[in-house]
Length: 307
Image 1: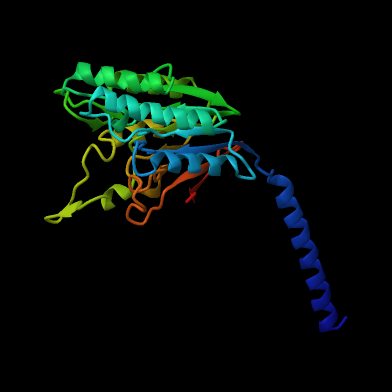
Image 2 (image 1 turned 180 degrees about the vertical axis):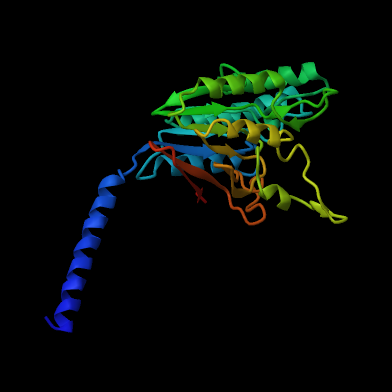
C-alpha cells in the first residue's frame, strides 16, 4: 500500500467518525420547545393628550397582528401618566381612557404589576399611599399587590417594587419585609424543575440606570433608590439559592438593557410610550418586548419597535 492509499483510507475513516459523532451529538441533545410567548408592555403612560390613546391602540394592534401571536400580555406598570399629586377627577379620566382602549382593542389575557405613576397620593402619608395603590390594584383587577401564576410549566411571580419612604413620602424601590418573606416561601415551594420568571416595575438590577440623567459626578456614580431596587444584593442573594429563577423583567427607566448576573438574566424593556409620547427616549424608541419561554428553562427577550 502506497502513501496515497494510506492517506485516502485515513481521510475516509475520519470522515465516517465525524458523521457518527455528529449524529450521536444530535441524538443526545433534544430540541427545546417554546411553551409560552409573552408580550411585555410597560410604561404606557396613558393621558388624554398628544395621541397617547392612539399610540397604545397601535401597539396593541401590532402585538395581536404578529404571525406568531403571544399567549398573554404582561403590563409592567405605569399604565397612566400621573396619579401622584393630581386631583381625583384627573386620575379617574386617565384610568377610564386606559381601560377603554384595553377593552376595545385587546383580546389577550393581561397580568399586571403596579408602577409608581399608577399610585394616587394626594398627601405624603403611608395611609394615602396605600389607598392610592389599592385604587391601582382594583383598576388592574389584581387579587393582591404581589402574586404568582403557573402557566405552561413556568411560574411567573409578579412583585410590588414601589414602596413609600419610611416617613410616608414619595417613593422608593424595594420589597417590604412581608413581601420578601412571601417571595422566599414562594421560591421554596416551587419545584426545582419549574423555571421561574420574575416581574417588577422598577429594575432589580440594570445597567441603563447609569444613563438616565447625570449620574456621574465628583468621581462617583450615583443611582437613586427610585431608579433601581435598593435591596438588589438581598434579592440576588436570595435568587442564588434557587437556580430555577431564570429571568427578571422590568420597565420604569424607558431604556432597554440586559444584565446577566449569577445565572439570572435581567431585562429592562423600554416603554410603550417612548419618551412619554414624544418620540425616542435617548436611543430607545417606543416599543415592547416579546419574551419566549422554553421547556428547558431558557428565555429569549426581543425588544420590538411598533411605530
